[in-house]
Length: 504
Image 1: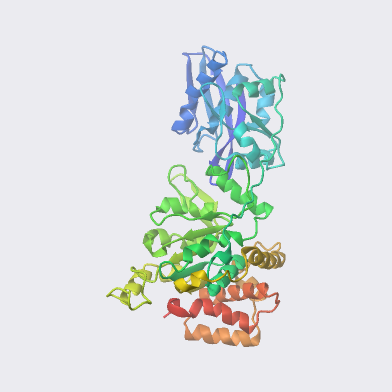
Image 2: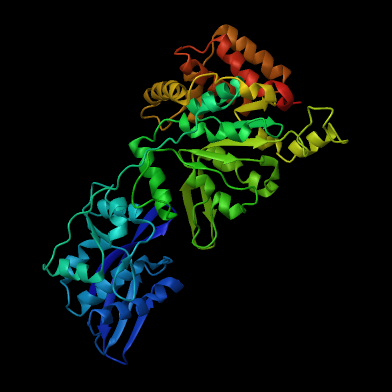
């Protein structure tokens, strides 16, 4: 007789169904696991054996074979412990086989039989709902998995509790979704003295999810501005929250099962490796670009990042997804993020100050910012020179709108875009392209004339031309204007062709 249990193997954010088959046969006593298990899965036999012994359950003196089907799919992770134990218990008649076959389970076993939290409970719950099965997870994962309301989620503290549930002695209660954490923090745009143009650029970037590059001398407030970006971003929509949380679940970043409506804000250091940024490593884990999905990826000191790492960002920025290629699989992760970067104008940082600049100025600035390739630079919708703030201005009272006021304007602009692109696949102006962009962002006659002259004078690429249109569309949305007028085009152009970052 072959007993069956069900679990999943993860390929990116996709949970692939896996059938755990257990067969008892005559021969020398043994415990074998087949079906391309990794080291953690192979060691499950010792954890299962010890957990059963802790409950005084003896294994039969027979050959035990566990097959993880499909056999050609690599199996990684310790979450296979629980389904292996359940298939084995069903094979020896300790629990009803029909009940086990109708559920999906995952969890790591301690030697005393308690269940330890594992990554990926949320994608597993999605798979359970798709196949119309109940889900059994460790107690620490129940609040996370319960956010998928289409399936029944049971959270168990120990393997003994799971056995009592299947035998009808003490049924497990359905888990409740974890509390949604919403805390914008205390950082406010009004904390930034001056820099009104930079604040305006930040608002435009937040409203249309446009990529932003800030260049300025040390201490001008670039990092301070970026740190306040989360305070003006709208909360995640339910569908976006689920998408983002599935990635964070695989990475083990969900806090006690709570799904936050705050948009991610990832700030990797410039020493981060390529695998850390785009994904990869053992198990092809999601990288920073995917962890920032539906949120912000902030790269401070952009030229200090290794050139190959920066170049790998070009395709994810355009496609909204990243593919981690391996010899036996291609793992796909979504990564629609807003790229915000900050850089000094040169190595010493004082290119604009003749009294403090180094002896190589202005060549040092060309060499330093030259580390950012032209194709990557072309992908920034807004390029901004951030001037230094005089120390005398630091004693001035707060100026400009607070983050709450700006957030309201951003939310209204996002609502207009959501209604505009409903059912089209796009969500914000940054997603519009091709005929759709021409339809929603066609400028007035005066605006088109200005754009054509600027494109010819500054040799804008086709990508640059379209990005100006997208930014102008967002500026018009913030102004509550349906048509894209000449002032909207003029402001959008000012963020692309003015200052030290203007194209040659």
